[in-house]
Length: 287
Length: 308
Image 1 (cartoon, rainbow over the protein chains, first blue to last red):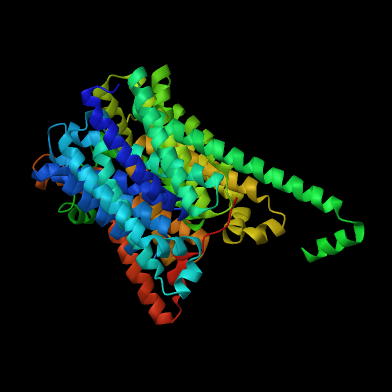
Image 2: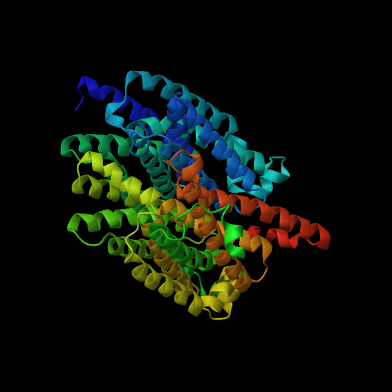
């Protein structure tokens, strides 16, 4: 499992998981699940286009991911964001279909982008992954406060001079960078699960942002590590395990949150009963 | 004769007599009409992600059906109905959370699809099957499929028609609908079921790209030019059929200028939808200026409705 050819896989997956955990936290907070699905899925059109003209696929991937981010933000000015995102992914996939139809040979390299090839990561791919991962983390650190404010309380953020449109675009650009970094390594389907599942589970356990972000990274790391190990042992596709573990973590998180809420309510009930009758009515009218 | 002189420069010979083209035109029209009608509510309710996700989620059902030797279509429909149920079960109050629930279901389903495809076939045809579902091919449909898909489409439209008034009320104002005694949860679930049926039907026949394009595109265009929901549905269905037929025609004609290797239908239809979308934006802006009432502009910018 830790043979030489597996070392790159472990390293690449670890880097991707850390970035996915951090960026995923904001993805969940902003409810940007659709964009997180659309950018990785649609950006493969850029890789197909680059393949067609003989350019580097990662450049094509990056350009299309950034163009997609710009288009979602641009169309989002005059339509609702989910409509803008749907139109963007449809256009990107259709362009990908067009590019693929221009080549007669079967572009297995392109289809690998949909499903990823984490077990076949070459050392030359590791370089760009590390660099872009560093840029993503740096961008999140730089944007942390305004991004957090505009995600949690858009009105307050606007009153303090944070332009929500700029924040939206900035976040989408970060998402585009994550796409460029992760898609050649783990594929577009897998990066989506990693962005959503661990972060969503983490939010069920705590309300404090730094703790939630840390938990999100931890869950993402455990998810990919377990997925690679089990996939290696059972010879089944890694995407299945990542999807399954993510959904499982989210379910556990939801059950935990519901149980805690129920307990809180029961304790509240017990406190209410402990209050003498006249005070109780006053308490009830006050609340 | 007049029609022929009008058509001849536009239509390459054999377009109307070719059987794959005939099937494509009929199937495309059915998918466009159903998607247009169902899609108007998808846009009003802000459920585009669910609409798109269901076209991918069904892949897992389709591949599972393939594994046990059943028809792909039934696997697709069954899985989508279950997925819609799970999405509704998770249901979180805010639209943001709803997209999250959709994402979790989508992620898990794609994982399952990867597993089933892996189990069912050897690696080379694995991607082939998925790519087929992703892009679909309107030109290579078996003729018998039209009856089944028409039945699914009718079921979906009837469901929307039955739910029309409570659905509209709960889409515009959740609280008002709840206060009036509308069973909002039940109505929401019913709509999600209609969406699952419509998307299964279109994704299996014309592929995931066109399924989403015809669900969201025409409806977004219609809501820019029409203010009443019923009118918007009619406009969306009309725009969808037009885009579908015009795109099919362009794809057919493109074999001439593209040297035998024609452009994909999906790209041509999406291109037509985009041209119409930007045209509708200009139209609504001009009309808004004339009436000095920008509210028409906001048709697609309705505030997200709290559902759940």
